[in-house]
Length: 137
Image 1 (cartoon, rainbow, N blue to C red):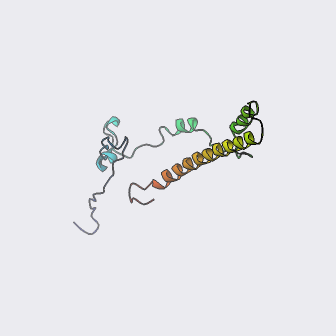
Image 2: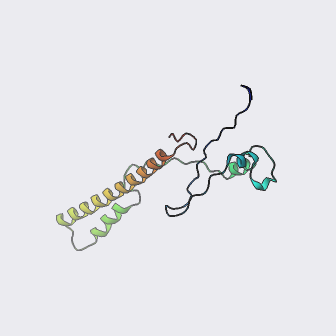
Image 3: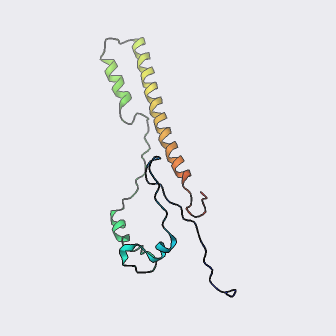
């Protein structure tokens, strides 16, 4: 073969894990099968068509909504509920209000931690994505 002859290059394809850690990973699709297309196409060679379901997906696609910026942290009214419920109780004095403030502070702290964990999970998921070809982020 001369210098211009085509050379068969073997490339590695990685299988994706679809289930939990105890489940078996799916086998990688061979390049030959990817070039010829799925078996359902009647063995017709050529690249996969991306236009087929494109219009359907665009119709189903929803616009991303921006997250609202709330002026106060008591979004669901929990702090207000605590204030009302303790105001109608037997203890209505300096000790009762300090207990209420402590409860509200604890509830807000828990809510903030919950939100921070959610954001942390999203960041971790985003940073874990890598290219299937070069394994670079």
